[in-house]
Picture 1: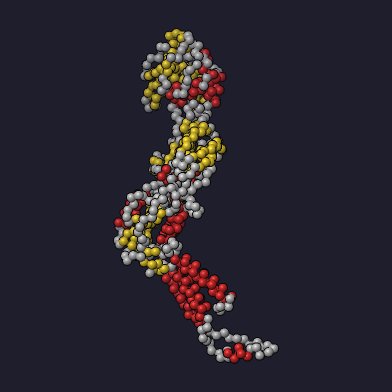
Picture 2: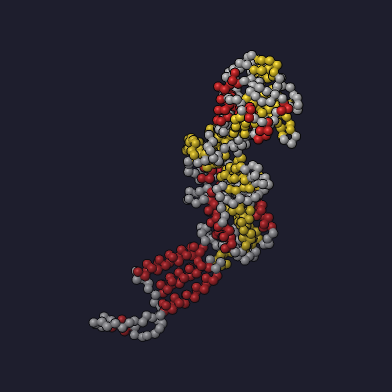
Length: 603
């Protein structure tokens, strides 16, 4: 037997005091009364003045001694040896994966139950019985090395919390075995989890926590840029029912805290449902949140995060004598920042300060004089062989980024120029829109040493002599041309699962939002869901983190406890520390003694 607090036995000195108090006679006071007839017999029995007398209330003394003994046992906290080994090393593996946040029907999470058992077993640390704490999560790590001090283990457990990430228990058990391999004497692994691996080692004692629970979860949530409308993104949302009963509810989509849409869902057991939401980006960070209005065992997966696609605005210089259609179109496009100049005010060196220059019925007539990335409307540096009246769209390069989502059906052309686009002066030209043998739209590229690639787009027609400005194809065509010239691509938002590693560039700093202290790291491994800010001088951006792991979201698989026994135990068969039972017994006996005293059975 072992005692965690042997100094409590000092209270045994109170036992003789209790016995002396019961043996000591009470000295009576002399009080004048009107008659002695009633008191003569009583006074005759107690005339001797001895300090100690005969024990008469033995039941009362016995109860008080038992109460004192139980209080002392509760203070010293006894432990009973179950093994004959002199030296024992135990590794307590605490599962901190996302599924451990599931709330059981009694209102306690699985992780809280695991912590309770870990604290109880941590009290068994003593000389000859070393205990280490190991966390099993996305990456297994040591919470506390081997120690014989229960206070150190309890303090480390107080700072442990579950993560939103998944993980592999095999890696944690392998690390535990490596730690034990360096220890002499007996070895023991205690795994506290709700889903043990099927091929767990024989020397691992598994404590199964929790019960099979129903759960509804968001398993996918992402935003996709919609090229047809730069201001709009399509949102993909998938909901899964991992329970054994049908469920229904609503899903809410918000952007920067503003509610965008609410849709109902109805799922059968084991079913999944995918929804597509068109979302309009709001001014701000573009943080999207999806939330289920259901109450289930795991609230963690009822909220998902995503980011709207972001693109750097394209700087455009419009050189024109006045074009109402173009000016209104560029002003309405949030992805474009443009300035308007007359042909007389334009100088070639201005092209170096913008991403693209649009020449409307003006511009240089020699290819060698073209500076920057340019779009020629009506006039161009190409020689004109004659008119094309009327042109017909017979062939288009649908794979070209300029014609993406552009439909030419029912577009009428009244006039076009028969231009001659021949490779020369280092320029390579390609016709992406044809009218018989005549090009209508030509793209060109020219490699510039040390300055990247120079690009050009030529319209061999005046769109004022077409009905193109009245078609949906017009804003798509101009937007595609401008972004292709500027080399601006819509960057899809970055999203990773909790616990996955994200490599950072040398100048990037990761910080959790909100709050969180930034730290320069080569790899970011977020363990909580939400938005993370990646600060960088070259490319600052954000990352959305979610738990989309079906193995973590399915809460119906609970393992059976395995064999094995703890080296030392201060637990009763019911799993409650023995000192609590001793304290409860002392309280019960004290209540019994109080009741007997008021019924005149004891003194």
